[in-house]
Amino acid sequence: MLENYIKLLTYIVLGIAGSSLLIQMVYYWVVFSRVAFFRSKKGTLNHDNFPPVSIVISARNEYLNLERNLPLLFSQDYPDFEVVVVNDCSDDGSEEMLTDMARKEPKLKLVHIRQSLNFFQGKKFPLSIGIKSAKSEFLLLTDADCAPTSNQWIRSMVSTYHEKTEIVLGYGPYQKKAGLLNLLIRFDTLHIGMQYLSYALAGAPYMGVGRNLSYRKSLFLKNKGFTSHYNISSGDDDLFVAKVAKKKNTRIVIHEDSRTYSVPSKNIASWIWQKRRHLSTGKYYSVGMKFRLGLYNLVQFTFYAACAGLFFLPIHFVFPTAMLGFRLINQYIIFGASSKRLGEKSLWLIAPFAELFFMFFNPIIVFSNIFSKSVRWK
Image (cartoon, rainbow, N blue to C red; front, top):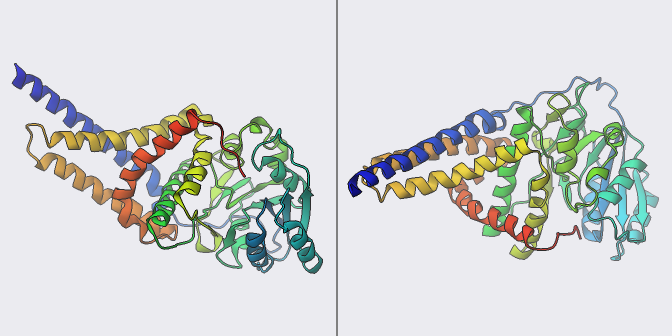
């Protein structure tokens, strides 16, 4: 009798491992392959006369980043653009530095918020002020600590627009530094990028990143900006995109010239704080998207758990070993091609190990958000 139960358990665990593997192959080859083998296409706007563009940055106590990165924006090879910087209650000398810079640089437009509005959380309010102050229909959003890869950043982002395009999703990786923490941060960014860019290509856009995002000002005003989620500290990028992005009005761009690189967290505590803030918006996604993202995370866990269990059950070790090997080959193909497309050529090598880490790390962060106070912007 016991032997029959063990045999039944073996079949059940084998079935879980097999079905989990099959579902993961669907994610790899139906979803993620869209970015892995993506070929950039130019938009169809009349770019003989490029439209005016407004770059909008909300900054609080970002003196050094603004001083370093604003000149990179001013030197962009683009005929007509402005840089709108919203100085949000900074007390580090940013206002004086920006005021002095504006005297020398006509492209710089300053908006100063000198009184804190405690009933608004995060950067949505200052960002809204900046967007409404922008003179152009085409907006480019980035952060003070972000640096474009070249002087073709604006041109690369804007050239992606089609007549019906209202949103362009860009990719914003982090700078490469020494150490394990930097590897994890960059892999996490790559993995998230593979997901939101692939789903956009599949006709189901659900987020963008505020480090590198473009949309039309009229879209922002028509949808009343961030008013539907002002009470949430994060979400100026993902929740807004989830609300307004559709299959036909959203495009992506991942060309090297279109990227902006950000400064990564220097210690684990600041990275955990950042992860908590980013993951705090997931519960506000649509039911369908939460199911897709949740199922992907679930089958990762059930596959590894089932394969581990098979090594202790009366079945030849070739079965779990073959499934693990088959998955690893496919993972390396998709992650390798995606890494190349997104400018992270070596990160695919750590995919199996980093995946195992985030299988446990991300749920811990999510649960910590449930049982602790909300995380503010700064």
